Structures are given as C-alpha cells and as structure tokens.
Image 1 (cartoon, rainbow over the protein chains, first blue to last red):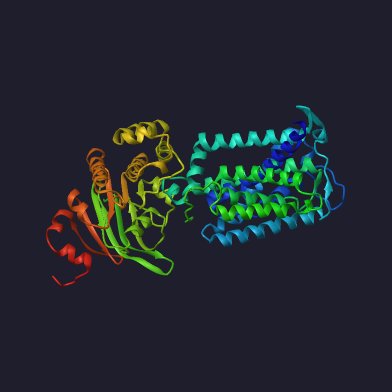
Image 2 (image 1 turned 90 degrees about the horizontal axis):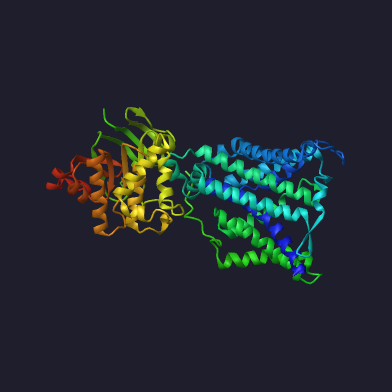
Length: 304
Length: 241
C-alpha cells in the first residue's frame, strides 16, 4: 500500500501540471481557435520574473524577495499580464486571419519572449531556491511524500474548483462557455467579444504562472527552455481531450501524467530513457481510435 | 420612420458579391417575409444586418441609427436579434443558461428574470426541460428555445432564418402559431426568411422576393399569392406570363 502511494502522488502531481497547462491552452482555443504555442514561454517568463535580470550565474531575487503570498499573487499577475499583452499586441490584429496564421504568430511570439529572456538572463540555467522547506517529506499512510507534491495537488484542485465555479456560476463564465461553443452566435446575443477574449487570456496566463511556481519549487532552477516540454505534453492533452473541451483537457492532462509515471515504473531500466516515445505511441493510438478526442466539444464553428 | 431601413445594400464574401442594391424597410409591429430560391442571398442579407457579414456598400439603419459595419454585439445591444438558420442553440449549455445568456442584454437582472417567466409561460416545455443541455432537445423544442432566446434579448425586431428547416409540418405549425402570438401580444416586428412563400400567404404580412441577390418582387403576401406574378418571379420567367 505504502509502496503504491508514492507513484500515485507522482502521477497526480505530474498530471496536475499537465492539466493546468492543457486548460490554459484549451481556454484560448475555445474562444479564438488559436493554439497558443507561446504558452510554454509564458511559464519560463514567470519563473524568471522571480529573479533580477542579470547574465551572471548567480543573481538576486526580484519578485522572489517578496513575502510568500505576494510571490504567488505577483507571479500569477505577471502571467496574466503577459498573456493579455500578447492578445492586445499580437493576436487581436490577426482576429480575422486563418488559424494557421494565428498559430505561426504564436510561434513567433514565443521566440521573441525566449530571446528577451536570453538577453536579460543568458541561456545558462540559474538556481532558484524558492520555498526550500517544501521539499521536506510528510508522513502519509506510512509513505513519506514531499510536502510540495501534496501542495501541488491541493493547489490544482483549488484552481480547478475555482475555475468550475467561475464557469458555471458567474455571468462571465456563462458568456465564456457560450463563446467557446459558438463565438459568432454569442456575439449576436450581445456577448462582448473583446472582453471575453481578454478574460480568457488573463486566466490562461495566470494558470501558466501557477505552473511556473510549481516547477521552480520542484526543480530549484530557472531555465529559459523549461516551459517547452510542459507545453508540448499539455498541447497533446488538449488534442486527445478533444480540442476546446475543458473537461477533456483536464482529464487528458491527468491521464498523461498517470501513463508517464506508470511507464517510468514498469519499463525495463535500459528502455526507460525512451519513456516519452511510448507516451507518444499511446497518443497516436488514441488519435487513431478517437480522432475527435476523448471528450467531444460542441460543433467547433469558425470564428468570424 | 421605419424600425429597420436597408438602402442600396451590397455585400458578399471575398470577391463574390451576393447582394446587390437591396432596398427594404420594416415598420414597427410589421411582419416582413423574405422568400426566394437557394442561393438568392436571403441568409446573407440577415447576417449582413446582424453585423456578421460586412457590407461593401449601402446603409442599414435601425431605429434611425446607422448600424452598417458595427460589431455584432453592438447591433444586438441596439435591438436587433437574429435567430440563425439551423437553430444554433448552445448545445452544451442548459436550456435555462441559453435563455439567461440572452437575458444579459436586458437592463437589469430582475427584468431578465421576469422575461424568463414570460418565455416559460409561452413555451411550457422549456420550463420542464430547463436544466438539461439544449443539445438534447428535439428540433422543434430547439426552435422554440431560440425564439425564446430572441425574446429574452428584449429586441423589438426579431429576424428568423428558415424556422421551418428540418422540422415536421405539425411542428412548423406550432412554431408559426407562437410567432403569430408574439406578433399579436408583444407587437414584435418580425423578419422571416423562408424558401417557400406558402407560410407568408398563410400568416400575412409583406413579402419580398429575393433572386440572385436582387429584389425581384415585393408586395402584400396574400395579394401576391393570388396571381402568377409571384411564381413567375420566383422561377425567373421574365415576361413569359
């Protein structure tokens, strides 16, 4: 029992990160039919916002020097602002362009963000000791689980519940769900398009900030490429979850976390480095079996 | 002054012009039918008024205000409500959420809640099924839902694109009964698009016949259905009669 608890927590906490990432991507896809490949760079940007810009290996804390609760708020805020800025500066101008153009623009935006980080911080990974006390283990039914993993799971659950409440119980949530299902029809019922899109970008960016906090406390390093692997798997999760389906994205995020940890556990030692190849094999199988995704979103109509 | 005035309206998609120089007007409390064969530009006309398709020339005035080229949400807020072809309810939202979404155009929440009761009284089946996803309703119920949704917006002018599309004849009768009721009780102005002119002659009102993006004929629906001019214009037998 205790032996299984550790991998279970590994799976849930890894799945949490994927789920939050997938949700951030699915929210934007829902209202804009945009697959935002800059999302991973938002994560890295949020991590570096903790540090004072410097190309030295060791640098002081910027946002990281604040009290803990302010760190959390400000990093979520940085994510939200960066994401909103990218809508205002880049995507709004391309609102009527075709989805491929939007996607390419998101790649370009990602490269710009990455290079801004490169110039301000250099490409060498930096060590960040944020909340080192979180790596202490806690006893949990006879297994000792790092406090951080417990916290990651809790934070994800709180964020997901908060988002469900927002989507199901508030006016903006109702408008956002309607806009995700049929954007043109929602506008014809008076839903203010720009406001809903800005809101979706803001929430998506804040989710990137949450991932950044979890990642940096887990790894203790800041690396300008650190968001990319998460972004890739989160994107895959949105695809197999059914593009635009929020429940699907969350479910698929946790599923990929579980598959990943199970493979890590069961694969023979010399095959283990190729774990992700097996993961993607599962994804390909899933796409052959259900190309529309596990959860079908409503008819995905074109933006106008 | 008419509630809706369309003058010299030209619109299309990309390089294809669909509408050429459309002139029409809808008065307060009036019902205007727009009929015509496939590809005549009927839906495009409604979408252009709603702001979904951008006009290339001409004017559209709603209660005297110029609305051509405004955003759809702004036009909706000025009092034009479109029920698009194929019913377009939000399948994943519940029946009540569909209605409440449209109620956002009302000045206050209590106003929207009062209208919700009116809609439920008009279509009791919607009250019964208010908490199920709209996608699970039958076609006829969905048509009632989208009409109810248009009522929720509080618009004085409701445009409906092919309300009979894909519905059984007895259901179509029900839909038109409720439309007639709305016209009588609420004094709504209606702009109804249909392929056939049958419903127009049954319900009464003015009829505009659209062919190849131009108005081929217009007049009183009942009077037009008497002679052969309507049929000739519909099928394009110019001078054959």
